[in-house]
Length: 207
Image 1: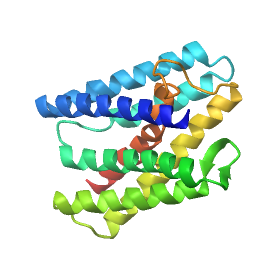
Image 2: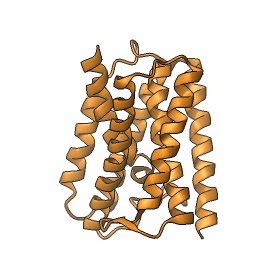
Image 3: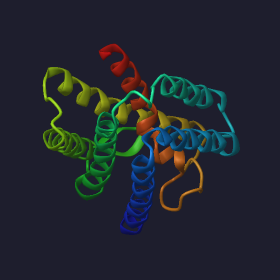
């Protein structure tokens, strides 16, 4: 079952990457509408599947959306935005893989599948990919960059835990059955939802 889920997750991730990079290649500003579609689907999931405490996750999504709207896709550089995407995705993927293979010590009761081993593997992999990405695209690695990476990794984990908490309060294993093997769109993009808040604050503070 773990192997099957891994294949399904990999398949979905590959399809999404292709769509994302295709849209980015055509016009990076179109990414705004792709992400807006994702937010819309997540809100639909919450409305349809979350039977209790529905208002709180809706407020959370709207709050994240407000920070997302604060990002000007006509001004930000595609490399800068892809930098955060790389950090989030590698942390999510390797936390899952390392956790499934080596995970023994639970990280938090709210999300029983999260392990200390998975977290450690995710952090190491995410940092490694972020540094490699920075080197390849000539992004300056300084104290500010390191802090940014740490903040995005921390917010990715926080977003995952927040989503798990909402599901547990509603006695749900998956946020929906929209994506086979993925537990729903909310599940797949939970790390992004909180990270985009940090990213929005960070780039506006930097500018």
